[in-house]
Length: 114
Ligand SMILES: [Zn+2]
Image (cartoon, rainbow, N blue to C red):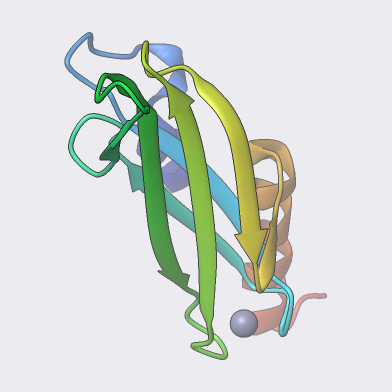
């Protein structure tokens, strides 16, 4: 799993990295998917009744590489860009640990050792 460790950077985050990592499992085929979103670039501004910024909403279409069905994730942030809510259709959010485990199981299955 060396490549995964490299991919996920082992804890040293550069300050310019505003990315948010989403780990998702497809409801249909169970495939694990990882996407990185940027709450600063990808989110749409939302305004309240007084036309002041009330928060940000980020919609993300995610596709796995097994059944190619779209998974729709939606994240809501407050005006300080702190995440307040996340919903998903067609899949479910999993932890990074679960994601890595699913990827490992997948690789083992494909190489015929599981
Ligand atoms: Zn799928």
